[in-house]
Length: 300
Image 1: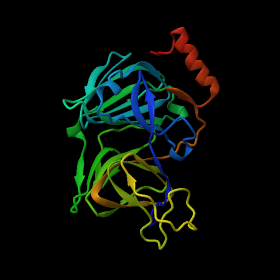
Image 2: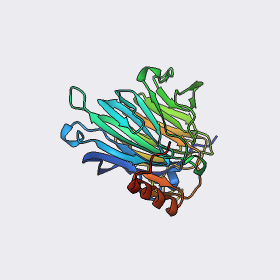
Image 3: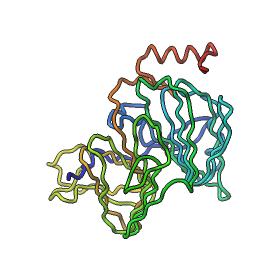
Image 4: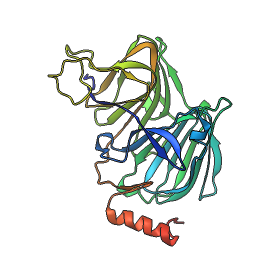
């Protein structure tokens, strides 16, 4: 068994999206090959309604899947297939845009004004770029929560873990999407297949992700064992990208730690990306935007 070293430890960065929503971007819109098959992760936790109520009005997607996980508040959505609905605290919406969809997402805070959650984008392989759009909407009560004797809790949104399987299925990248809580000062080791790219995003507490079996601390930038400095704490809004191995180790801090753990099999395909549309070639990308202008973007 080999513990995955930390390849990068970075903080999510403030950005504006939609009609002026203030959020923080962990990764996206650059070279995302280290995260393949994932393209983008946005943290839209916010306690100021003026910073999010403008929402994400009608916009297109093609060639990707979007995964929205709500912790507090609700997100109301509608689309070009006449779907309407809302996801609330603990719910997940997994949207496969495929050959094209136009939709809107409008966040509404809870009674305290909180709107908390995440949106992850997963790429579709070339063979499925033009597949039919579909939704999987999962209510909080349908997401398995597995607990260990030491108080560790894992919500399994997608994939198999600790003998349970999450409710989202039929996803091209065969991802694993987990919401993990580790009790204060506990050390835990979690299995991850060696063929997968994997990252963690910390959103409560803090801890250290490291190779606890080795004499040297794991560096936070690059996998170079000459660096013996101890790794920085991974705390709220920290993104941890792991290198290769088949397990990851986390040592929770004084208040415990809660993080998303996401992994998937890399597609290793060319990426042509502009805004909400992700294809394999620039020609395909131009065709998509031409179709938007001509009103032929949506396919039957």
